[in-house]
Image 1: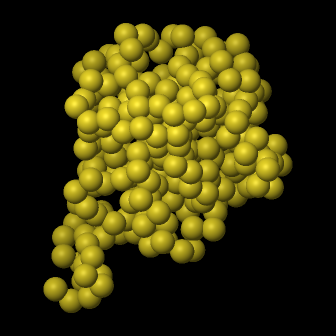
Image 2 (image 1 turned 135 degrees about the vertical axis):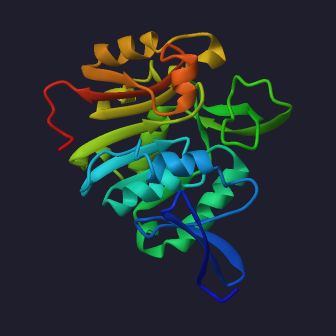
Amino acid sequence: MCNGEVIGRFFGIIDLIYRNGEFLLRMPDGILLTINSYSFNPLTIAETWLYDIHFLGFDLSDWFVLDIGAFVGDTALYYARRGAFVVAVEPLPSYYEAMLRNLELNPELKSRIISINAAISSEDGFVKFRTTIDGSESFYGTDRFVTRTRSIKLSTLINELGSRGIDISKFRVRVLKADCKGCKYELMNDSSLRLFDIAKIEYSSYLINKTYHELMSKLEELGFRCRVWAHNEFAIKIGLDKHGTMTCIKKNEMIIR
């Protein structure tokens, strides 16, 4: 294999390349991701670059995106490529390390991404995660392996960003993107939700025997207008009450063009 050679292709559009002794994925927009046994999930890659389920706009200049459940940094890089400033929060150490490697692979985007190794929760402290190998870790799972990680409230995180000179109120549009397998319900009573213009939430209510209606009710109380949709086949199979994506925008805001 020659250095930099394309040796395969996923979904017909994502290049598998070999460079400097490492296998990498090159996305249609040029973003590079490392590929290894614990951080490669074809489903999440397809959702981001084939199905565009995270799409918010072509030009996200002067947008702030808080990416909760950032996995290996795929969505953080996706948004940064389009001009956003991103805070990527990932609790699992193995995924967090893979995210750091992926940021190094994309130096032109790295300066627009802050990575944080923590779980967003209703309390500051520590939480235990039930871990799998497919990106579906949760507070509420029943899997065998347990990881202890730092937990932080949304409001605490916003304050910590402020102490680092990042005032999210200065951005034109503020987005909360949450894909954290059950933690959405931990977010709903945090007053800092009011700071965001868009909330894009992948909910997995089946983990705690709830439906999306509680989430929607809380967000509508804060002035958001929401729609619910199936972003993958599992959401169709299990039903939107239990799993899907909720995209919510503040009323009277013409944000997505």
